[in-house]
Image (cartoon, rainbow, N blue to C red; front, side):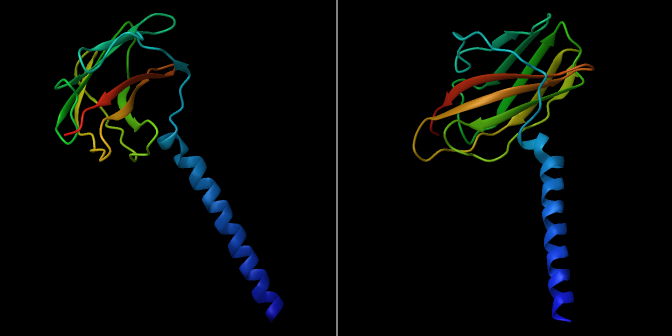
Length: 157
């Protein structure tokens, strides 16, 4: 009987490991979005002052605007993405703290009109002062996934 109990415990442990691995594989795109193409925005652009754009390889342009400016924490923000030269099926913006994990926050943007997407968002406050952020525009087309990282520093509230 003890050998049977030990075998059942081993099988249960193995099944739990398989379930954890399968869950990690299934949910990994949420935490680490896959992208076929990564584009870079104009390095001199400052989201705190204006909308910033990036040219896509093979044609197309993506522009990100976050208002009000300067970008505050704990206030409703309007996040707007304009896309031209490519047809977007889905648009989202992933907000990630640089150097400090601020949790998962990736609002999906709604299509307002062809090529124009928007959503409201709120950045959490960082108690240590200004917070560097990366807002990655995630664009899905018929043929590819595009990621465009934009960086900015939020001001304390």
